[in-house]
Length: 64
Image 1 (cartoon, rainbow, N blue to C red):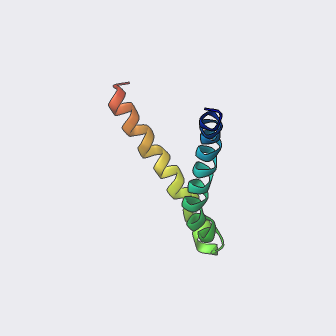
Image 2 (cartoon, rainbow, N blue to C red):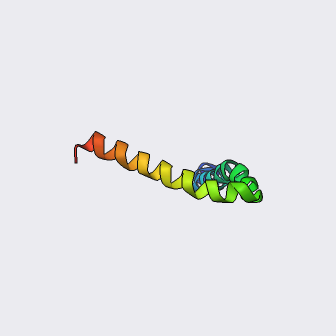
Image 3 (cartoon, rainbow, N blue to C red):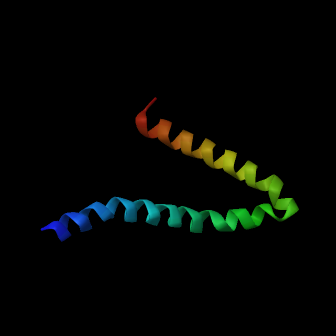
């Protein structure tokens, strides 16, 4: 029974390390784009556009 609770206590650490790894894998292509000079200008524009579209979708869904 002690092994069971020991294994259960490891799951939060596994979840956190898995999520951090996933975020790093997702963000790596954007980090490589920042190294190219002409994409340094476009990346913030696309990010702001993404936030504006996301805001518009959420406000439409909630009816605000």
